[in-house]
Image (tube, rainbow, N blue to C red; front, side, top):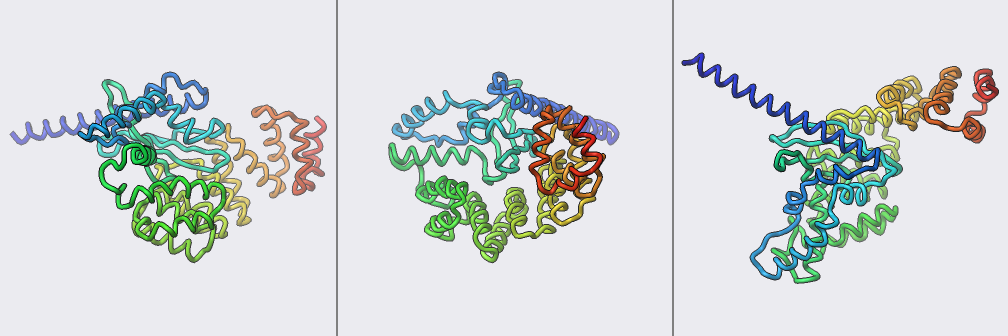
Amino acid sequence: MRVKTLFFTLFFCSTILYSQESLLEEAIALGEKMEEAAISEEFGDINNKLDKDGFVKRIIIDSDDSRVKNFNEGFLEGFSKALSFYSLVFKQIITQEDEFTFIRAYIKDDTAHLIFRVFGEGGINYHDYELARVGDELKVTDFFIYLSGENISATIQRIYLMTAKGSIGQIGNENVGSISLESVAELPKIRSLVNQGMFEEAQKTMSTLGEEILKEKAFALIDVQIKGNLDEDIYLEALSNYQKNFPNDPSMYLVSIDFLLLQERYDDCLKNIDQLDKAVGGDYFLDFYRGNIKYVQGDLAAAEAYFLAVTIENPDSIDAFDSLLSTYIDQLKNEKAVEILNYFVNYFGVDKSDLKAIMEAEPSYADFRATEAFKNWENN
């Protein structure tokens, strides 16, 4: 009997493992399709991979009140028609110039997730897409944005609640979480001020909302961003409060990078990058940030190693090759530098005359331009 029980136990465990492995493979396939759609800018099939019903349920508040029902119907009519994966992600959250890179899939509490890196002129960000089974397909039902510290459904629900209040009055109680709708309405304004670099104005608006507001993660996170650009002491206090209220929150590691760089706290910044790397389950591209920090610290050999690692993982990373070029020139590795110049021409398709002009315009490259290696490249 014990042998029989053991057999069924092993069979049950192997079935669960196979089921999770199958789910993970399906999630990876979806992640790869999402990245391919971003590269090709063809979103037809991917638009069908958004679980509209599941997503909307996270936003709408059900009620037996006829006024609320009518409002919900009107809201959904306009919102659902325009809702697609493209409109939600690529029209509202990131730009077409941003790189949208699939990092990995993982399973938590029997739910599949996808981690994506977003990188562009605005810096680095990560999205965590939550998947749900809809019929026989996996679809995106919501996603967490690291820089905002919340799910996109929570952001849209604020718009829904404020629109409802202006149209039919309050839906439900007067609060979202522990804060009032009036306070909630200030968050988009504060984010707009931060994006414009108007940190003092943003801080003034935050100060009118009271200390209770900092118990909500989205407000606490933007409070750290604001204070990091105003004063080191109040920034450290805000950072400490955030870490106390939201321990091990991955958004904190990402938000702190720029502030720590500005304060030239390079070792602390490297620790933050390590924590972020761990939180997203490993991302080789963070070596690009490590390389830049080592470059500023004067550790050119370490910087070279980090940049080289990124180029090996991603031969299309023009930023990494550009940084690697600088480390070679600074270390007088002239032949290696010329190899990078040839890569720009032959792989990236940069016109050689344009590249020459760029090299001529950079004062720090004067000694390199005088080398035999560069002159041979220039004249051939």
